[in-house]
Length: 425
Ligand code: PMP
Image 1 (spheres, rainbow, N blue to C red):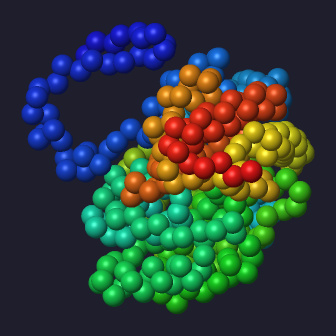
Image 2: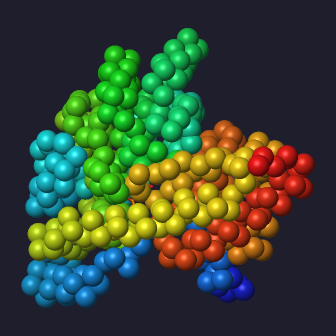
Image 3: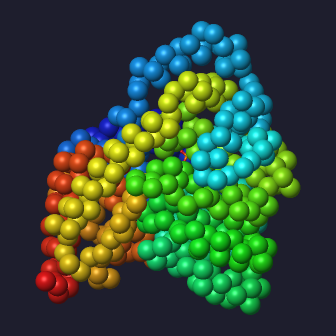
C-alpha cells in the first residue's frame, strides 16, 4: 500500500488489492460505506470555505491551560493507574460521577448499570451487535443521525423512518408504523431517537410526547434507545426530563461528554436495563477490552475539580449567539419558499427547500460560493430528503455564519431560477 499527498491535503491510499477482494470480504462488508459527511470534510475544512457542514463542538470555550494541568497532574501523580488497563465496564469513580450528571435530567441511576464506552458511537455499535440480525427492523426518526444509520445498516438492519414534525417524533405515526410492520410479520428490535435538539433536525420532543412514546413502546415490547448527547445544551431553559427517568426497564440511555466537555477523550456511556448489562459489557470487552483509563480519569478529574456546570453554561451562550446569527441571516437571505426549524438548543438547523431542488446536486455550486452544508439524503436510509439540508452553527464565528448564509441564500435562489421554481414574495 502506498500513500499519496493530494492538493486538498488528504492522504489517499492506493491499495494493490487483488481484483476478487470483494469475494473474500464477509457479506457485511458490502454494507460499509463512507459517511457522506466524512467525504465532505476534506472540502469543507479548507480555510476559505464557511463550513456549516460538520457538527464539531466549539472548543474555544474550553480552558485549555486547565485541561493541560489536569492531564499533566494525572500522569505525574496517577500514571501507574491512568496508563494501565482498567475495568471493562468503566472506571468506578467515573461511573458514579456519570450518575450525578444524569441526575440533572431527572435520572436516578445506579453506577452498576453504567457502561463507559469510547464515545456514544461505540454504544450504538454494541447495541446493534447484540440486537440486530440481518433484516430486523430498527425504527428511527425521519431524518436521523447519520452515524447511527451507518451502524444499523452495517449490521444489516432494515431501517424504517417514522415521521416527525417541529415537535419531534409523532406518536400516531409511530403507532401506524408498528401496526403496518407487525401486519407484515416483521421483527422490530428497537426505536432509536434523539429527544433533545435532534441531530439533524434541531427539534425538541415535548414531555407529553415522551410519555406517550414510552407507553406505546412498553405496550408493544419495543426497546427505546434514547441518544442524548445534546440534552444539557438548552439555551433558555432545561430540556424536559430524559425518557429514561420514567422507565428504567425499557429504555437504553446513551450519554456523552463530547459536547459538554470535549470529544477528544472519546468518553461516552450507556445506562442499561439490568437484564442487558452483562451482554453489553461482554460485547464491549471483545471490541476494546476496556475504555481508556487515561481518558476516563481525565474526565473524572475535570468533573471533580472544575465548575463544569458553568462551563456548560458558557457553551450554551456561545452556541446561542451562533444560533441567533444563523436564524437572523436565514430570515434575511433565504427565499420565502424555504422553511427551517428554530432550535432551542444544540447545534443544528434543518432547512427544507422546494421539492424541485436537489441539495446534493447543488453542493458544487455552494462550494464555488465558499459555503458547505450537508445534503438531506445523508440523514435517511432510503434516499429521501433530497430537497433538505442540515446547517450547523456550532463552529464558525457569528460573522462567518452570516457570510455563509448570505452566500448560500444566493445559491439557493439561483438554483430555484434554474429549475423554474416560482419565487414567493
Ligand atoms: N449521537 C448523536 C446524535 C451525535 O450527534 C453524535 C456525534 N455527532 C454521537 C451520537 C456520537 O458522539 P460521540 O461518539 O462523540 O459520543
